[in-house]
Image (tube, rainbow, N blue to C red; front, side, top):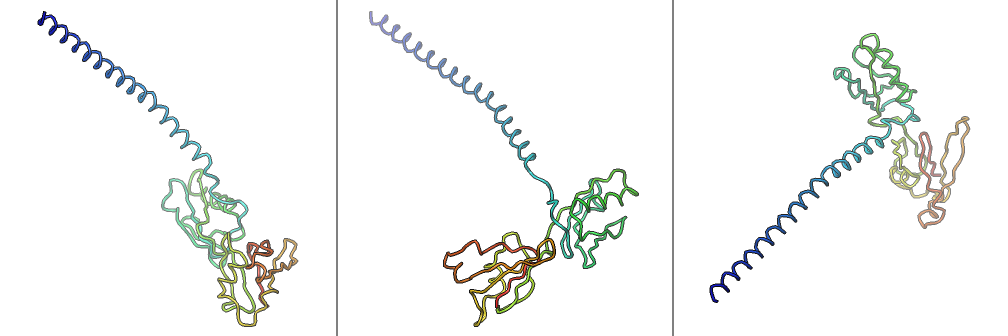
Length: 223
């Protein structure tokens, strides 16, 4: 009887071990299969994200921007590294490139300049593919005049406001009329509009709309 009990116990133990091993193997296989099926999904998602990223990258330049003197342009001619380079716009509004020499840049948009360069390159290269990107904007400036520490002309950034202009010019002199500041802005028809700015009110949180963004050729006047 004791031997039968021992054999029965061994059989029961072996059965448990085999069952547990089989369960573990099944679970591992299922996990691997799930991972195998998941990998292509993740790769597909990654590929989709890459495609979306490329599609939403945007245009290489702004068609509304007019190139001016002192701007720095990145001119890229596909598969022509000897011609591709960063060039400054000279004071006469021109840039110089290999093969074609001088090209009028000032007064053109980047897309217009691309066409001009491509047209000149057609004498040397078959179907030139040209891209022009404005690397540094130095032509857009504004002026600060009157009772400030450093009146003068300043480079304009996209986010420069009237308060920024005052800070850049070193702040007010002792007798500045801080409530009577105004911005002179030239309209498209050549006339000027006068935009009031009350420094005392703005810094107190009143009339925050007066703290407008400065535009190219604006003049901030501090009486």
